[in-house]
Length: 480
Ligand SMILES: Cc1cc2nc3c(=O)[nH]c(=O)nc-3n(C[C@H](O)[C@H](O)[C@H](O)COP(=O)(O)OP(=O)(O)OC[C@H]3O[C@@H](n4cnc5c(N)ncnc54)[C@H](O)[C@@H]3O)c2cc1C
Ligand code: SF4
Image (cartoon, rainbow, N blue to C red; front, side):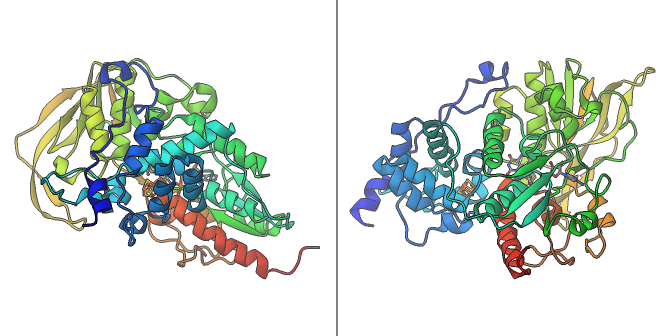
């Protein structure tokens, strides 16, 4: 090891200050305060600048993490932010939302190195440094930095869905001089960034500022428009649009198919989250009624959405919040950090437990969830050990509110109303490696292709598809 590497490895990880659990239970503000300048520079100095940069390889948008941290360490925070913006449209969001432990930070060599004194330290806190640099830059500039844009080409693309995939496509097209109109079914643009992810993970102001930035670049938004019903892709291509990008996500909540799912007080995860986290005026009419104050809440499922639901329930003032999951913590797919935050906020976990029915009273309101204990058997097709019910182990958890957070699927509307568009059995749209679908001039990416996944993978898909769209637009005869 060189002296420089030894010196860097000797620096301890810098803590990221966060709200005390008792305080944050009473508000929806972001959990983490984030780094200050000094701590950020010290944390960046832990990066050993390895030339192979496995962190960059593990990042779906291939951020030049060592390059950014070399600048940050020197105090050039805006330069570091610009490095992140070269490969990412949403660095402040990914820094907050990526499961870094299985992406960049999971590959960081600093996390594996044994120091000369035998100490083991965590990897460089890459995500929170990425948010720090880009937040700092936006604060300094009073908004997102304006990219240099090409002359207008007269081309126009319809982008369906205003989530991370669609927004990235719209920005990439705008930079290259191509116009776009983003069609969105919900009242506001943002996709799951607005209608899903709660403020305590990421404040909505960041998304609002990004939408303003896109509007400044000439991107048009048409919300409250359900494509496939209000207008079809065929009509768009016959009309004013030269190409279409489908970024419709996977927003259809899975159901348990057990007795009692339609009782009052039983919610699909997204409905619960948006009614708990957003003002009524930003919601469609059927979701505008505020949630009654919950007392006993049961959330079914063990992923990130479940953690968002349990932590929302805590902030709504619930006295008992229980997460019910049929396997053990080792098989949970969500982030360990989110489970830790939930535990600190008083959430109870019932592992190896599966609901068998939801129980209601004579008025049709939920009163409890009947569950059965499970044990783990052989691995199933997902590679995780299969839960097996234990006979006679049934018990009831009292509940006035239940949220079902057991995953999402894609909406079949666009595939079934678009001629020549191929989709698989679960309505996932088929694409080639550039994002082209089976229908000429129609491209796709994000959760409607991959199934429910991540913000950063949707973003990566959007950037890749934008390149293919630009190539396609350039192959068309010149517009008159
Ligand atoms: C509650 C929740 C929490 C999550 N937390 C995280 C996290 O912490 N970190 C992370 O990386 N990922 C997280 N995810 C996953 C992540 O948000 C998604 O993978 C990502 O948003 C996918 O982006 P997308 O653009 O493909 O789709 P979406 O964000 O789903 O956007 C698709 C948009 O298309 C619109 N749409 C759909 N059909 C039509 C139509 N026919 N016409 C018009 N508009 C339409 C939808 O209304 C939606 O706004 C979470 C997901 C949920 C649900
Ligand atoms: S985009 Fe996500 S994976 Fe890539 S560096 Fe940022 S936090 Fe890590």
